[in-house]
Length: 128
Image (cartoon, rainbow, N blue to C red):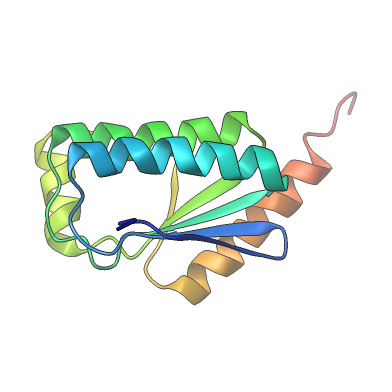
């Protein structure tokens, strides 16, 4: 069973983690998401962690890697639904998600990823 189904809606991918991930499942997510971004040309990713109750340092680093990989492939990413206990664990592990966008709900995540996509399309103004 795929623990992280990935669906495409318009030019975005939504990856919903269906429970706590094993290391193997987490690595599979990274591979699958990268492949789907490449195949579909998605410009946005919502990574839904609402159901995830437990993370360890490996999974925390891998979540960061998923976001960085997605960005390198041209897709802005927002992590949605991090539970308070998961957030505290990530902080206790010393993991900082510098430059990574998060949102509490899927609706807020959708709006945030649209803002990031719009900003990336306009890019920084040069020569002013």
